[in-house]
Length: 193
Image 1 (cartoon, rainbow, N blue to C red):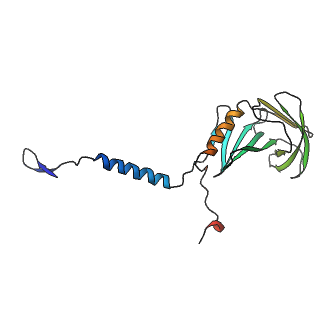
Image 2: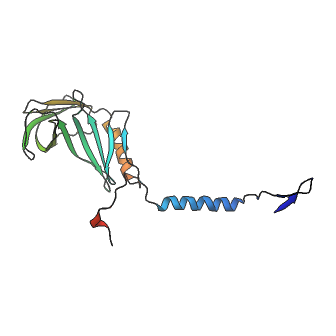
Image 3: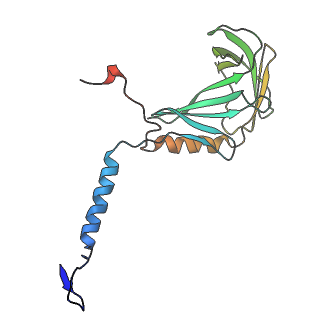
């Protein structure tokens, strides 16, 4: 639409934005964003010094580093759709060669109570010498403040786990969300042709 100025030159009049049109554009934009699969790669350090990170679109790992050896850690998994904290693992330094699958005797002490005897299965030995261990039986780790792990090989580590309940709650709320934890390219055999 044109209108004339004082010198009678035609000028293009700005078109007013219709409120209905802007709502329609906003709705279309939101619909477009929601129709695209959303993901968010997770890598968080909480205020209690727990690390929460994703290893797949449906799995989170929550871990706490050791007090003496920062390469040692205690960790557990949170997997969709059930979102239960499960499968704790412990990484400890070792100066001995140990076969994967072998079992090591040890103790786990929670909050300076009586040590609980356990058997730890060796899942992997890293190049650094650290062992990834799965305890086959263990005391409750929930609401713990201090966890001490000792093995028959003479290695031990202390984990300050104050705040573990909050880390569990935070990872559970992330797990229950509708967001994927990370974008993973489909494998060739998963592609339908």
